[in-house]
Image (tube, rainbow, N blue to C red; front, top):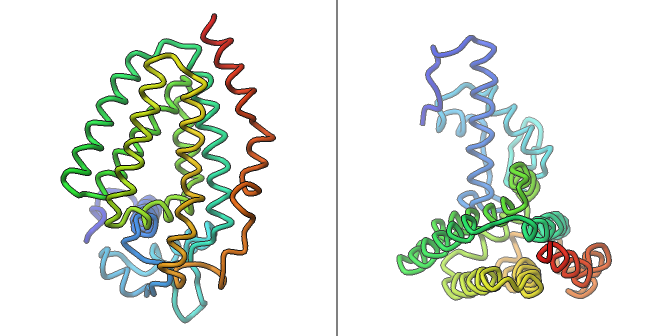
Length: 267
């Protein structure tokens, strides 16, 4: 798999380009679950796969190690990091705060075009379920949530949430593997959210989004029981669901956000 034309850029620029492309490709495979937690990787094997020298592969793995997606044993090997649920919950915290804030701000602006786009995303999700395509459903899910963020008018929010969610997205991808019941559930929650927005019921929209995003707490335990070898530690030594999200409600309580929405809708 050649990643670039070796003669297209200067030597320095070529090295930077190759490192970035190797990095993004390996990262994509880790987050998507194509590379499972614990999988071993060799620099020579990756260099051969991507038709590059060992240097950009080594640099890409070092960058992924800084993000704690890869574990490197110097002079020995590299492996895909196990899933750390504490990092998953941290990413969930970031995602919920930002997406609910975007929804609240979105009440202040006209969003008929966004609703139309959300409807299109819903139809694409329905088709992905019908075709039994988990990867396509996940892509449509990303589009749906990026559209919700765009309601705020802040175009960079999606990039912030996407970059912060690597550990969370690994768990989401693992959970969707051949789990068509979960896809139906997520699709139904998306429909309920869009329906609340269409009715102008922003209190219900916020509640639906909050519960939808917190579903990760419900299926994390089931996934750990099915694949304990994918996770850091020997058990779920994490706070109970209520405690795990208490900080979110204290920081950004439903009552406050709903009040903001109602005031915004009245203006």
